[in-house]
Image 1 (spheres, rainbow, N blue to C red):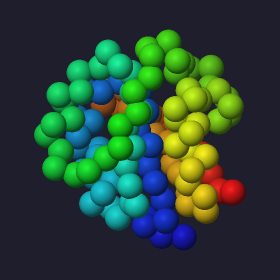
Image 2 (image 1 turned 120 degrees about the horizontal axis):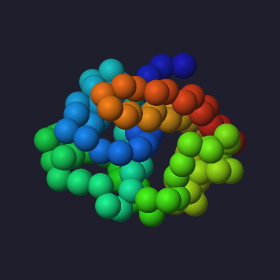
Image 3 (image 1 turned 180 degrees about the horizontal axis):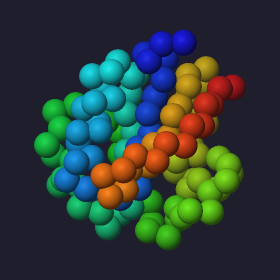
Image 4 (image 1 turned 90 degrees about the vertical axis):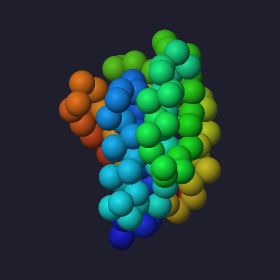
Length: 108
């Protein structure tokens, strides 16, 4: 498996360094980056990246720390994950400049 076989989903709040994560994952050769966050986040903070990314917006209460499996994800994020086919996915949550990685490898 190569990085080009893996998609990254960045979940959680947006801060003034989220764009750096988007750029970094693309620079490492990952297939695509998806940002999944809440509707009330300051999306203008993402304008600093020149890289393309997909954006999923959810209601603020739709995503919380009780997530134990893909069944607990917001429906719009589950829809994206279910459309990946044979690709692999890594979900990453970034809070307060710390990366908390949750590995979710998805295939058929």
